[in-house]
Image (tube, rainbow, N blue to C red; front, side, top):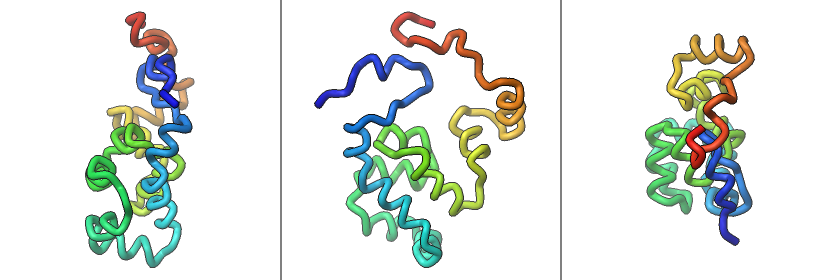
Amino acid sequence: MAERPDFDDIPGTTVFTAERSRRGFHLNQFCMSLMKPENRARFKADERAYLDEWPLTEAQKAAVLARDYNAAIAEGGNIYFLAKIFATDGRSFADAAANMTGMTPEAYREMMLHGGRSPEGNRSIKEGR
């Protein structure tokens, strides 16, 4: 089943579809493995070796190693599973979200306290809005 093209028309948003779920299955399973302390320790000791135990694509592994959460989402990662990675790194969800938006944690928190990002200019890529 093909992705719905209208899902890719929302600026700054990647909709977690069934196709993306299938593509990211092993990536998300890897993330869930970090729920166990012994797996977090193994991952932190040698991240690449631990990732190589999983049937991930090279793009998925590169996204994890670079902590590029936007790339991981594009590769089928779900933010709620990816949260296990930034928790393993001792980072908060807000800090990771700030990184994903290109903002400092302080600027991100301030934006969210004031109602979040404006929808103006963020409704359609193809319509130039």
